[in-house]
Image (cartoon, rainbow, N blue to C red):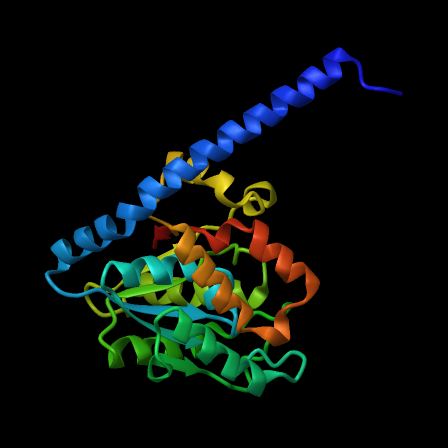
Length: 263
């Protein structure tokens, strides 16, 4: 049945609304990307009177690009120094050695040298989406690197792990333990990446206005050039680039936006 005048009118109105939302999101993106990271770094430095030294704690090679690229690139733009502690080699399909090399290539594009990357390849921390890792073991590895590198800001997943992956959520559990037990060095803070609902997760830059409106402790939004840099980093993980991950790079807000909360 052909659409009537009302149907075509509603379709046109929906298209105009979408274009208006997209235009508004782009304007907000340009405005916030220009100053959001600098403002965060300035507040942090003023509070601490020293540099921002970041430890990104991930579960698998590709997490740094797939989920945390906006944080890494925005903080680097603001002058922070970053290191990565990857708590497994991502060996679920026996590709651990390949994925370690891919991690180094990705981090290089994100501004993190190989000397600042540590991959924990421990038999009790296997890549397994159904397995919660041991909290005490994780906490031991984390605390060792935080103290050795004089880290004052740790970034990791929140309790939802973005995708619900048990290895992701284990990282938040371990850092929450260190935080609640006051085992972290004085002045060391923890930012956790906000897990959002499925709708927001896959609307890319259309989530910019929502993220700006909702309360958060840190919000990092990439410029168009930085977003392409993040995609290039993700494409370094060639062993993981199945068809749906190409769609992920196009539509996921985590390739453009990170909203984070302090523990």
